[in-house]
Length: 415
Image 1 (cartoon, rainbow, N blue to C red):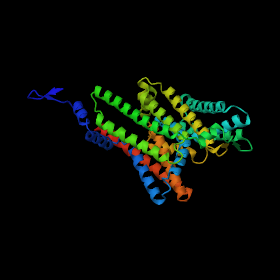
Image 2 (cartoon, rainbow, N blue to C red; image 1 turned 30 degrees about the vertical axis):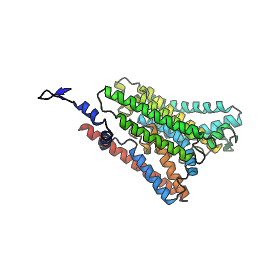
Image 3 (cartoon, rainbow, N blue to C red; image 1 turned 120 degrees about the vertical axis):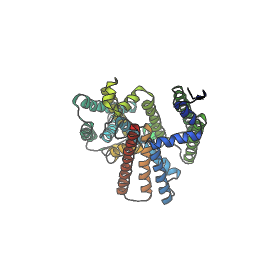
Image 4 (spheres, rainbow, N blue to C red; image 1 turned 180 degrees about the vertical axis):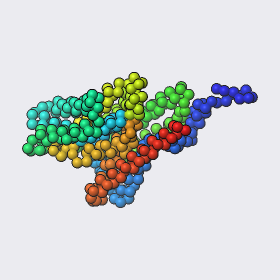
């Protein structure tokens, strides 16, 4: 607090910012200010998704039908989990090109151990995840001890793991999983009870409100600008109503698949780890400036190892979900566009290719964008070549937006 010539107290700049944001209008102005400085968050992908849905719905009214949206959620879950791992590895400024092969190898392992060798499924799945963790450890070792770029090591891993997948599947090339088993039912026909889905949506809104109150209190204690209670209530209330409306609409059909609920649960857990833990802050610091992070006392090699392991384990989980969805493990699992879609989803959703900036929710938003394009073009009975071209264009736009936003943040930081 300072005083003017007349002795009347004057608010310092920090107090002025707090007062300005203590209203809905102030929060809107603060949001616009962040946009001008390049802090776009998930705004571009949300706007893009709304445009995609509007175009496809106008061309084919079946696109937003409940049955199609439920199938869309199933399709998002498998590659979306893999994309969560890509978020981890991009946060530290590295890349993993082998996630598709790792997912396919994990699905093949489950099939061989469960069906061919008679293991219980509750042992076959952890075994596949353990192999995924071992692959991630190998990549980290090659980077930390030998300095091998992750692009090269994971590209080699893509080929090697694909070869192992073909080898363990043998001449048949495909293993059918027991139809009607709990695993297959989870991937095809299990849905969250309607009442429970409404409860989950309400709990999500309550959690967002509690987190917002806690963050605002901490910022005010530090003398920083903070969101007002009124604007926080308005924001979380609107999001809660939106979630409840989505649940109500999907419940008109089969409802929300448990597999998609599992994917969302992993996303929430990953978001907490990236934003609320020392591990997540270390990931951001290393992606922003590795040398500065090392001088600050962060164990860079350990964080790299954790990122590679998390990426490979999530890829293995995605492969298990894919085999449950298809009720089979085959040579085609993890091939095709799985690898590219997982990487594209993270980038399209807002995770920076330059490292140091991203969110677990970017995997969720990005994979919805990609699967929406695929679903819309399928309903229009258009060639899959268009899907690749449109997805490539969307990816290019996302990277351009990220580059421009990064340049804007740098210029405003210098100013």
